Amino acid sequence: MSAIPAIDARLMATLAGLMPIARACFRDPWWIIGSAGMRLAGVGGTEPNDVDLLCSGRDADALAEAWAAHRDADYRPADDGRFRSRFARFAHLPMPVEVMGDLEVRVAGDWQPVRVASEVQVEVNGQAIPVPALFEQRRILALFGREKDLAKAARIAEFLDDRKPHAH
Image (cartoon, rainbow, N blue to C red; front, side):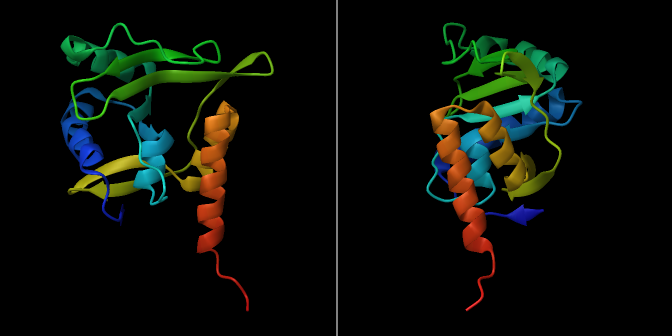
């Protein structure tokens, strides 16, 4: 498990509110992805506006039931024709939490499940938070294919390249 540099207080508070319910509801592997996942993995220059949570359909359903009173039922994600999942957005924490159970992305006309093959556990306030390994985050963002996701994938590539030892 690795510790990360200081992160935004809103993200810290959101994670503090998320972790107890995640421990109570989730039975399957889950991960923080998107800008929050990048930030937790140490990629600077990214301050998330929400927390994207990738999990199984049954865990998304359990969370939706536990947080039913906090669900933002009017919210519709952009590009919803490109993605499908057991989606729910909750807006009662300092940052919205968007849960995607059994997420699939449409690629070349076919639905492809979004899977995480490698993860890291990041310590935040003594809590182990699962995020995809950076090369996995980059692959997932490239799979999403939107301009904003490709820019994030490029940012991860820069970050990884900067960490490589360079011969002089």
